[in-house]
Length: 483
Image (cartoon, rainbow, N blue to C red; front, side, top):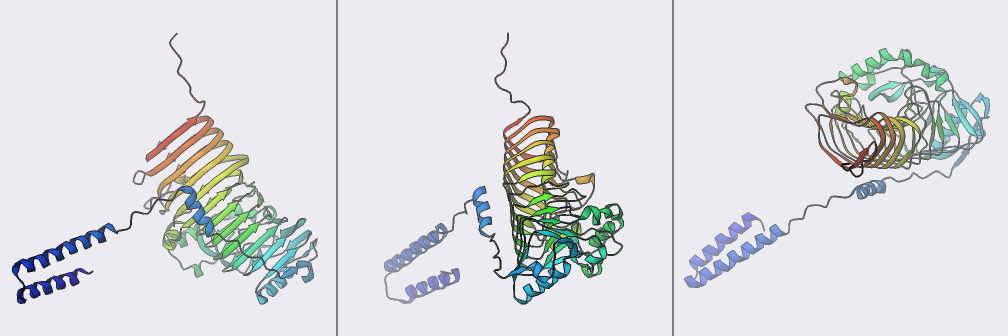
């Protein structure tokens, strides 16, 4: 009952008592009973307020995310690439065959392009369309050509956290749904012989892209390509939904290997990497969500998984956090195991790293990095049951990456690390470098072990750090007795 209605009801009762013939005692009795009824009613309404919602456990949070990751359906419409003119003889250009097959996929609202055993030269990009799967069978290998002009005209893409128009990624899907890359074959970007040679020439265009970012230049006017020397990604999904990449080997990338950009509902499973060129990250989710990365064999010259969310002004303006990412049962090998940043200005949250091990050396195990140019946040990060061998640093969290930046400190908090082990850390075990005006906060280490280490712990500008069963170096047992 609304308060206004209650007031009108009391007024009517008073008027009734005043003008009726009932005794004063009866009138008071009526009013008293009404007031008791009113008090009990209000008390009942107050007591019916919902109780605070129970905080979900880590496992419950993870499982809620998994419910929203649904594998795309693979089309039954089989299209054999060799029927469109591909030869698989390591000489004939297969690009026209891919183009023809993809036209049919678009006309027929989907298709499964099957690439049988053979070596296929592809002189230009493969642009995937909705409801299409690319099945690269065992014994099949795609080798992309090295003529840069074949990857023009420029397409909408992103480069180190800034939206631009640039050379097409070698395999590219833009605003597509239900897109699949599968099979046991090899995707070879041929970067060492082609685009990777541009690394030493990229600085002017790299700096120009960042300037355009900071000055809010319209994306349509950020046209790179010929003469810019910004290397394209090997595989990129841009503004896509329902993605599966499974089984293939990704090798010799010009730049980042697999880039999920503003995309969602993604599964990456049983992929193998063999990528040793500059900036050969494995998976780079950026502005993306609801992602499962599982059972991956990494072997990369750079980050195995690098979660990103845009750079500086543009990232803060886009305000689309990367979130709900599960990385499990993987084998790490390369520069760093799991990285968040440094381009993460829109924020990163709800990342789960579980039941992973190592297949070789990593410079750092878990690496969270930002600086005061970025802003944004890193929060709700869970690392559970993960082991590494020899590293330089075990866990490294920094708000002052490269010692640069000002004005937009990053909020890093709520990181929960449990059952993490290292054989040795040649430089440092656990490092936290907050910022004086924005400390790193609420970091939990539980059941963490580092068998040998140069510097065990180095924390600056950090608060609410919790240790539970942490052993760095040899575990100390009973104290010796006086002799």
